[in-house]
Image (cartoon, rainbow, N blue to C red; front, side, top):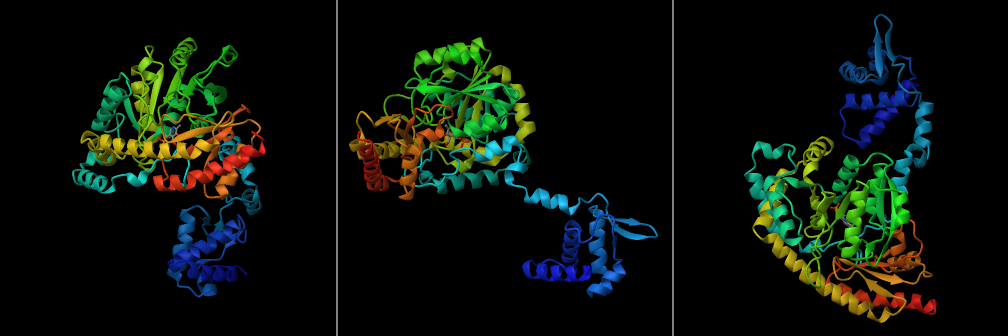
Length: 490
Ligand SMILES: Cc1ncc(COP(=O)(O)O)c(C=O)c1O
């Protein structure tokens, strides 16, 4: 019986993979043990018996049995033979576990993380929000820089990166932030991370304890929601109005440990946080000894007037951590971003970042530092800004016929997306779905809402689609929206 099973399994394995024979026998025996054909505690045929029954060489059989012994599947008892280890789990249990539904296998947190909104639609198509046109990235130049830094590389560059990342890159980031984002900082405060997502996780892990409260904008950036969910924080949504997050006295009943905001261009509504709100938020952070996490994800692309100064620039109490990313200006797969921490947090953040994430990629960081120092970053930014401005203008013109008292655009002064606000009675998810069926990927505003039920609209990106596509599909988008509005009699 057993030899039949082993021979069938070996035949199957030899068809599927080019494994040496002793490895095929090892796999077949291991499966026999795990499936219960050879039960825990049962005697295993001797190498001589197996050699005869299977028609294999003694060496092949011995090699397979030895490997199984080394891995703990088999135990030898002197004088009585070889047995399946008693501690191998019973197959009934394993099968049961394997057959259990995913929900039951995952932790409660795992179920939450894997089930909630938005992340399903990440295809890049015309109007996908949040996506830059990385087809414009100067690949040949980048390749030259990378090659150069790989040629120049010395052993330390291949190690994990200590002290917050490659020093010239941290210097370049600090210079950029001082000038363009009015962030007063010293180089030491800059920590290079693998992007905003990692910066958020680090802040949540180091500044808050499990079940501490985080104030979040409602609607919110789902990446941040997930980062806080994963660290076990209690989300306290605060509705956003035209001046950004609007905390009132009732919210202070749940005092925050962290406050996550996108003040320059609220994601996704596009609201710019007013100066009064900024001061209110800083005062609240001071009052509750909370930390503000400022996600400045798209300030590089401001189309009218000078960039809005950062919230970090107003902070006199060392309460704001500033988060930036190269995902939008360069390309998302680069996975590089930066976190600016108040001086008192520099050492613990660097140490914990090292222990938790073992950061690396120094040659890549060196290439990026040179890319910035040589002015390529500034010119890529200039080109991108100009190109996005044209795309934005084209989309605004296409949407113009839809606009009126029941359909208004917010947040189009900056970034790579705008928000078309629609009446509360309109089902924006159904509308987004309908557009999706036409190959036009937009997101429903309500899909970003955590608690509120009054926000309806479409979040429409113009970063990814080339101008010609916006010109072609913009009117289609507008037509579908108009038809939907007409059904409401508005
Ligand atoms: C609000 C917001 N923050 C940050 C990011 C960038 O995150 P990361 O650096 O993890 O790519 C995005 C990207 O879509 C975003 O929309």
